[in-house]
Length: 313
Ligand code: PBG
Image (cartoon, rainbow, N blue to C red; front, side, top):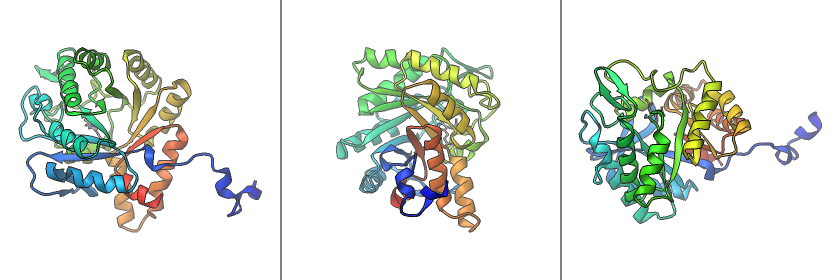
């Protein structure tokens, strides 16, 4: 076996490759901030004000990164997250700005309530319960409002049953049949999201997300989630998190032919970055992790490491 591992031959037999074009850069946009601010649990990652979005995209485009997913931190929150579908809300403003300056960039928007509700849950709450069907029309309104602003792809992340269909119907009804849906189809109730909740101010005030996000003991169920979302009209399906869920990515890849995204989440980023900062890991570990996600079968990877890896590539 060592014959083909010689230094000059190795690259010829490489089975998986990571390409800059298949990375998606998450961008946290803070409506009230005047300047960018580092997220303490995500060393080297920032929340940026709206007026710095263009600069950020331009830096990424120079590195060959063309796809972005926007998360908004709104100026105000309420019970039903109405800022999320405000046509002049933080994400809508940022999308308009980004599309005007960079029409070739791919702008994906996270469609969820948690950053916009006072209770921090991804659905409408009544008597301490997170309601499913009452949430769906709101998700439709958010998606339409993002589409109006110019989003190419909307990405519902709240794990409400029927969310993909509700959004598809809402988009088509408003003339946005060409806007694609990337569904967070198999999103697990994971311990790896904590830094994101600091970044997006989306922590919940009571309970947990286990009645809507998946139980991490299960993978058959993940395939059922994905199948349902494909049948409801998802153009791209996602597994999230990525690293502790490579088996799920692999099973999804084997079973389905739709484009498959993997979300290398905030906690995965924080673990590796803090070890690298201490000198306990080489920064090449980042590349190895992303290649592993590709090797498992993902087509796209959403990752906070996008810029550093693009530089490396
Ligand atoms: C919102 C959302 C979350 C993430 C993406 N969209 C957080 C959550 O479900 O609490 C997590 C991303 C990350 O940890 O990097 N529903």
